[in-house]
Amino acid sequence: MPSIFTRILNGEIPCQKIAEDERFFAFLDIRPIHAGHTLVIPKEEIDYIFDMDDPLLGDMMVFAKKVARRIKKAISCQRIGVMVAGIEVPHAHIHLVPISSVADLSFAKAKPASPEELAKVAELIRKA
Image (cartoon, rainbow, N blue to C red):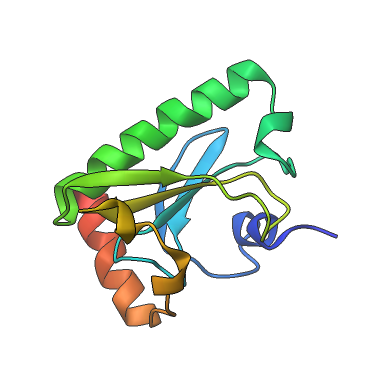
């Protein structure tokens, strides 16, 4: 059964796409810790990030870096925090979260965002 992220890639579930290339995809988390919270995934469905081969993992981080720079331009924050939990969805992914302190990287702060809120934030980042 495809992961929810594969279903997003296949267009079965809507998302606010931030960036895409031939191997990676970035989209807004629907339960953001902070506005601009973005997920970066490989298009290939790989369960665990450290099961990715080294070149693919390295390239995914380079892709994430480009996305993080766009988020930082669009969203007021001190830095873009990077987190890999890897438990909740069986598809490797990196969380990019706008933060101003270490305490800002807490999933306890996450709450659902409306489709309108997500669309507004996504447009800011895509324009950056």
